[in-house]
Amino acid sequence: MDDRHAATLSLPPAAENVRTARLVAVAAARRAGLDEEVVDDVRLAVGELVARAVLRHERAGVDDDVELRLVDAGDCFEIVVTDRAGDDGHLDQDGSGEDEVALALVRALAPEAGLTPATAVLRWPIP
Amino acid sequence: MELEVSSHVQDGRTVVSAAGEIDVFTAPQLDAELARATSAGASRIVVDLSQVDFLDSTGLSVLVKTLKRVREVEGGSLAVVVTADRVAKVFRLTGLDTLIPLHPTVDSAVAG
Image 1 (cartoon, each protein chain N blue to C red):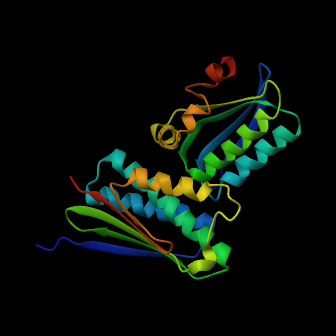
Image 2: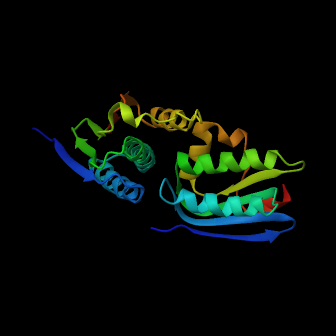
Image 3: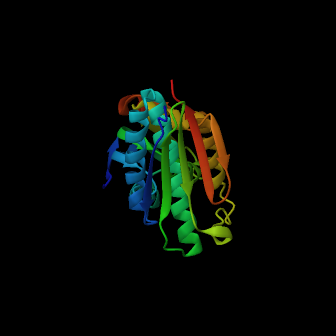
């Protein structure tokens, strides 16, 4: 049986929209059957990645939406955050290390993480 | 959503309290309140996050910035009150809990 459920949320790149992304991701994670502690991890990881995408769009001067895709693939819950900032969205030119902290957090929160500048994929097993 | 931020003085410490969620959108409000306090000369600071149920890396950055400022002053200190597990976890995962003491209540943070 194909138990794949997927939803895509398209958000204007504004800081106030990051909370919406978190709320939708939490709802999807709970529906997929993840434990509440893991749902907390999803909330934070999605928040970090979507905030990062928004900041990258702001840095690059890109008004296009950032995209959050949520997939219940039956045995795993997957999130994909995509931005359209390109090379102009490069963060941490001030050397503050803040982008590194955000990415380190994300890697600590998701058992599987594939992070490239414009696309981040995270996966959690569904119990 | 808005973050509620306020300050008061307790036993020689400036207690900056926040209620709500601290993220990329609301962290600047906490940043502004802490900047106001340190500019006014406060150097022994307690940040009360007992009414905060979400904190991300932008919130941590605000705290790190404040930590650097208070360290520039002799006798300066920063402590944070945390009650939500998911907030404490962010400090633990980043190791910031080894730089900034976490307390379960304002009273224990002020006494520490």
